[in-house]
Length: 535
Image (tube, rainbow, N blue to C red; front, side, top):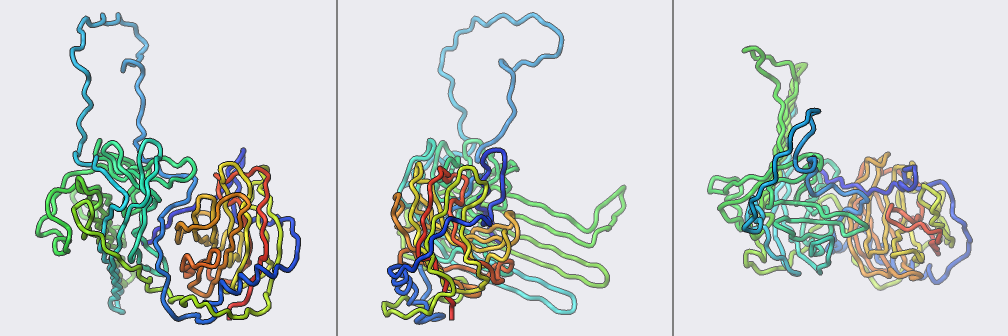
C-alpha cells in the first residue's frame, strides 16, 4: 500500500480550473553568465561529484504534510430541521399553548461518548511506535514469495500555534517511517503538519491557507467523517463509529513490549466478497475472485493513538490456475511521554530501495561546462492566466545536476512558491521540488495525470522567505535516487523510483504552484539556471 496524498495545484481561479502542469508559455528571459552563482553551484554539489554512491545517508526530521488546497472534512454533515422541529403537511392545526413552566436549572451539555480525550499536549511530547510489514503471494506452479520489513519511529511535538479554536503543535518525525511495496512507498507519517486536542477530539491541520481542522478521533460523539492517524484509507465521505474494545493476552500485539493491555477504543473499516453465495437455499459460486480487507486504529484515553492493524487477502481461481495474496501491517505504541516514558533519540533509517548518498566534503570539484545555461530571467505571476508560469531548458535528460537562484516576489501575505520540474516527458509526467513562503520544501511526482500525483516528501528548513531575498536550489537526480540542496545545505534524499516518471524529460523552473499563492502581477526572478551532466 502506498500513501498517495495529492498536492492540488489546479489554479481554479475565476470560472475555469485549468490543470497545472508546466505551461508552454515562456517567461521573459534575459541571458547572461553569472559567475558568482556558478561558484555557488560548484561548492554545493562538489560532495556528490567527489563521492557519488558512497557515504552516509541524510538524516532529517520531516514535517509531514499535505500541501493541498482541499482537505477532507473533519466534522459531520447532517440535515437541518425547520424552526421548532415542526413540519408542514398541508393541513392546519391549532398551536399548542405555551407552557407556563419556568426552567429552574441551566441546561447541562451531554457527557462525551468516550471520556479521557480532553488530555493536554505540550511541546516535546512524543509517541514511539514499532511496525511490521508482511506481503505474501502464491501462484500455482511457481510457489510462494514473502517480503517482510520492520522499523521504529517517533512522533515528537514541536512549537505550538493557534489554528481555528485549537492549540496545535508542529509534528516532527525521526526513525524509519516507511517501506517499499512494488516500487511505491507506504508511509506511516501523519498527513498533516500539526496536531492538537479540542473538545474531546484529536484534531489535525496543514496550518496552510484556510485549511480546516480535521478530526482524527472524536471522543465527544464517537462518530466522525473518515480520517486517521496512521492511515489514509478511511474515506472522508464515510461516517466511522468508534467502539470500546480491550487488549488481552491473546491479541496479536500482546507480545510486543510497551503496549499495555486494558480498555481501548477502536475505529474499523472492512469489506469482503466471497466466491460463493447462498441463493434460495442453494450455494452458487459464480465468481472466480474473492477478497477481504480489514483495518483498525486504536486509541487510549489520556494517550491518544496506540495501535494500528491492517490485513488484506485476495484469491483467484479459474482456467486451471489459482493464486493468492496477503498483506499485513502492524503498528504498536512502545513508549510515550503521556505514559511517563523518557524520550530517546532514534536514528532515521534509509529505505531499502534507496542508494546511500555521499557524505558532503569541503573539497571543491570542478564542474564540466553546462549543457544548458546559465540563464537569468523573470516569470510573471499573472492573475489572468490559468497556468503555472515556467521556463523550459528544452532538454531531455534522465539524470543531471540543476542549479538556480530564485528571488522571492513581493506578494500579499508572502504567499509564493517556486521550484524545479525534471524528467518532464509530458505535461502531466514529471518530478518536482519546491519551496514556499511558509518555509516549507517538498517533492512530488505525477505519472500522466493530476490524479496520479504522489507527495513523496515534505519538510521545513530555515531558508529566506522575505520579499526580495534569494535562495539557491541545487538538485541532483540519478536513476532512482537524488538529493536536494537549499543554499548549499543538503535537506533531503529524493526517491526517484516512481515507475511512471523514470524516462528522460525536460528540466524547467516554475513559480506560483498553489491556488493559495497570490497572483498579483508581480514577478519571480531567477538567475544562473544551469543544467549539468551527471557523470
